[in-house]
Image (cartoon, rainbow, N blue to C red; front, side, top):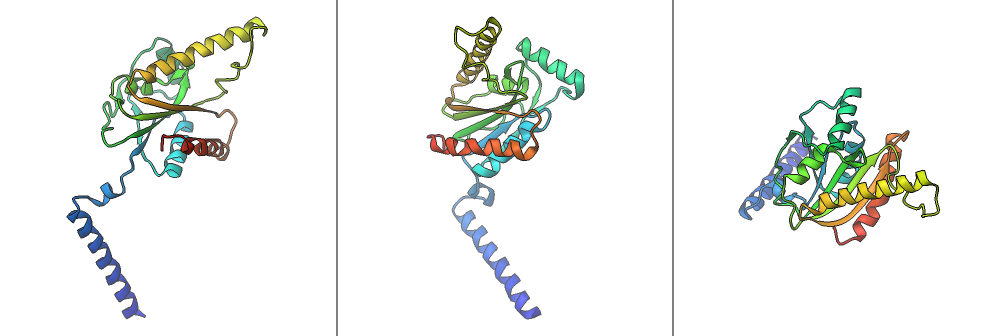
Length: 218
């Protein structure tokens, strides 16, 4: 039995060495050979957007990069600061400040919604980086459905019409921000997360993947 195991181990090592030699001869590293042309780029304050990003990365076979906010956003004061920074269209210090996107054709941006806008860290990375010639999909998360008032007509009560128009304007601002990057916008999906366990958030994310794959995005 020991001899058989020794032979199997030697075969594995020889096979891996041969694969490595083949890749090197082709001018590729092992990592490069497994490199995806799709990147899931995300920021998450509470972990819900991170869960969406991880789910998408696993299903799409994509690479993933977290954008970190160097400003403390934890707790109540972090929440208040996030809302104020978003309201006043401020930027923040992020890491990495200028991620290398050169090898990716497709970018999936995952962001929580702050004050009906993309989060400040994602706002920052979109504003200060070049996404030209990239195909971009946006996934947003929030406690509520940001399109919940979109179906109301002009005969609806004043408050509902006001909220409909207010949210429509906010969505237009988000579209303008993404359009300004030079990317080809391929779609936007939103996931309401309030009160949902992780498995339900994953399920809601996966239901959009079929539609995502049906586009020219992938």
